[in-house]
Image 1: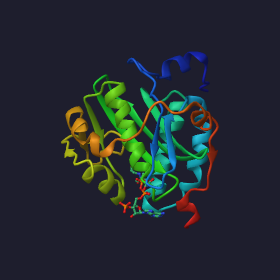
Image 2 (image 1 turned 60 degrees about the vertical axis):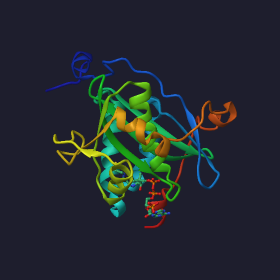
Image 3 (image 1 turned 90 degrees about the vertical axis):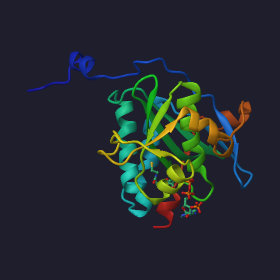
Image 4 (image 1 turned 180 degrees about the vertical axis):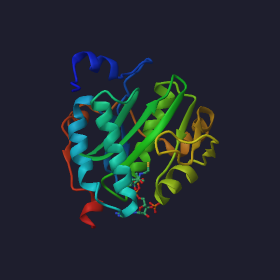
Length: 224
Ligand SMILES: CC(C)(COP(=O)(O)OP(=O)(O)OC[C@H]1O[C@@H](n2cnc3c(N)ncnc32)[C@H](O)[C@@H]1OP(=O)(O)O)[C@@H](O)C(=O)NCCC(=O)NCCS
């Protein structure tokens, strides 16, 4: 009979083992004029993030099922101390949780791009979140390279073609050996003026309005 004792927990638990730094929140003005706040998620918020993702897990359209279940597992793994060097950012619009992204640092210089999910469609919310997670990896945490993979055609268009990423010969760790591309620090600097937006600091009242975001019915579920 195996029991999860405090001792086994100390063997299995993983945490950040390289220096981490907080992501400075920013506000991105969307084409609609709405203000999207992007801030770091705390580990304590994970149950809320899981509530937000759960409805898309049965939705095949645009690979929400596959990306949803992978993102769910990664966030749960982070919450339960089974994923190392992980961070997540959230997008909040009018107090509503409209997207989630996450990355993982393999070491100080190499990061793994994990997943991106937009609950509200049509505003490039996912695109801004994707840019923000790499901004955090490269500009705040000091990564030199980020390895990127995608599940579906929208990801291919949004991340690989828009960002003009180069293929990387080794398999990606996140998706069972799927195709891999690399975002280098130099390439990030070149594409930044075209793809990375936002202003800082976020006005105090606006930031406060993001503290307990509302979980919404995702657009892809409404359309089902
Ligand atoms: C990939 C993703 C994060 C991109 O988010 P985004 O930048 O906000 O872009 P949207 O999802 O709004 O739009 C993407 C495409 O969907 C279509 N689309 C736009 N508005 C839409 C809407 N209201 N409903 C359905 N589809 C819509 C368009 O073809 C759009 O392409 P275009 O803007 O280049 O013309 C998002 O589509 C998503 O969460 N997809 C499921 C998970 C996934 O594939 N993640 C990426 C792998 S890591």
